[in-house]
Length: 157
Image 1 (tube, rainbow, N blue to C red):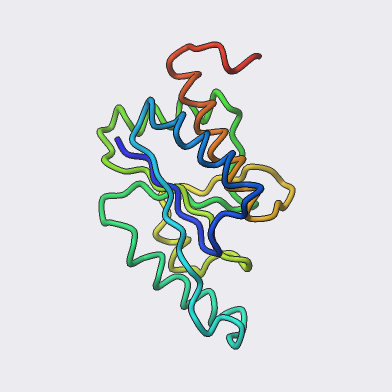
Image 2: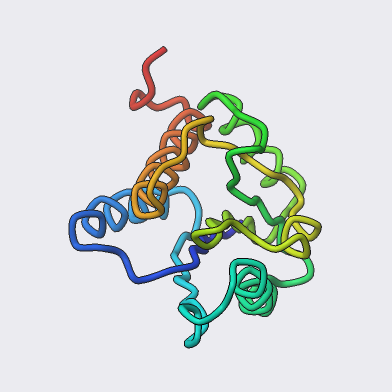
């Protein structure tokens, strides 16, 4: 199984890049993993929120393949403990899922077409975090889940 991290926005900020790269490399010990940063539309500043989400949706859905298991990160999604995330990822692997895609939407969230395409909506927290921090938290939590799956010592109860 391959793990893809998608994020709408700018490239990783320097203060986040090292951590994201480190945890992504660690995840790659268990599953092939990488990031796809989806640049916002060129005219994003001139679009209203609804139109921007619609344009971003087109870009996102062009990247998502038909058989991908799409996990949308959204504060209104279901919250999971780290062991529950590990079980969730292991279940996808057991089902022979080719790619699991974790998607961080744009600044205003995602269009309804993306929500409808998502196989699962996951909330990291009821709090709202800056997108760059979400990237780091996501990469770390997926790594933590991988270590739980393998019963390694990174995660402490």
